[in-house]
Length: 346
Image 1 (cartoon, rainbow, N blue to C red):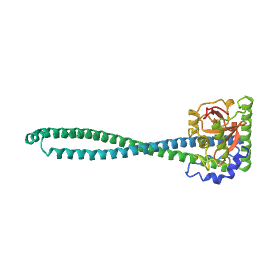
Image 2 (spheres, rainbow, N blue to C red):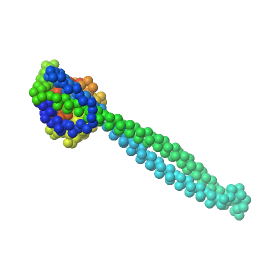
Image 3 (cartoon, rainbow, N blue to C red):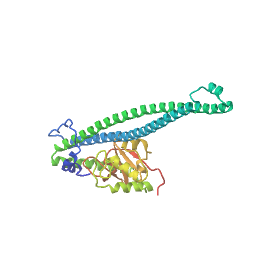
Image 4 (cartoon, helix red, strand yellow):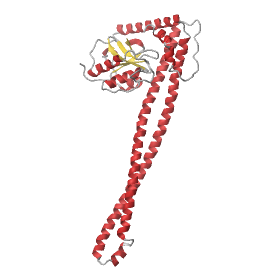
């Protein structure tokens, strides 16, 4: 991680492409602010950006599910309309048949005028059956009409929900872009010496945190991965060097949970898209029981996630301006770990 912030400043033009929405400028650092204060500000901005990214990701996933529901209801509504149209055709046909068979006369009059009363009675039975079938058809028609109206209301409501989610997604997208702009503005105020000093201090903090985990016995002994875990790790490692990009799930760029969710999807075990859902819905595992493929989740709000690869290291898409890389497990404040695959180990 040494030199991370310096690299970010050197690649500001690349990161600036993501900054499309104007926001209130971040306050420029005071001339005599300490390196520790600068690092704290940057870390806070990155954390806020990642939290906003994961919120955006969650809404995007909800929007996908809502689109599927809208499509399903639209399909049902179209089928109900076809059924209704067919029912109306059947009802009309039966009505015409009944009229033609009755000759336009009532059954009592037809019986009196018939040369063969028995034949008239038999014919009346047929007419009666036609009338009953017509009644059943009309009942089905009414039920189909009612179902069509109910589906139309559901489809309208689903579409309204979809449009509301789309509006929320846009606001969250603008929020992420604004926070990225804040990061870029702060980085632009720092001299190369300040950037180098901040990078050194950040690296020292990671080294100290990793040593504490080792001393406390929290880092795991080497354990073999499950077959699916091994596939997930190999996929994640194949992405090394690809850029971090918020909201991305590959194959050209990833955000943190985009990398972990895609790795496990390619391993044959789909998991939730966002780091918060991964933390909430996957089985927890103690840090000292980690095996390759398990996910390490960071910060109290579970806003960052990485994949354990063994040896006290994780593979991760760290943050804007960086690339998928292997880092010490203690790169960020650890919340805990989860295991997507609870199958037998090799």
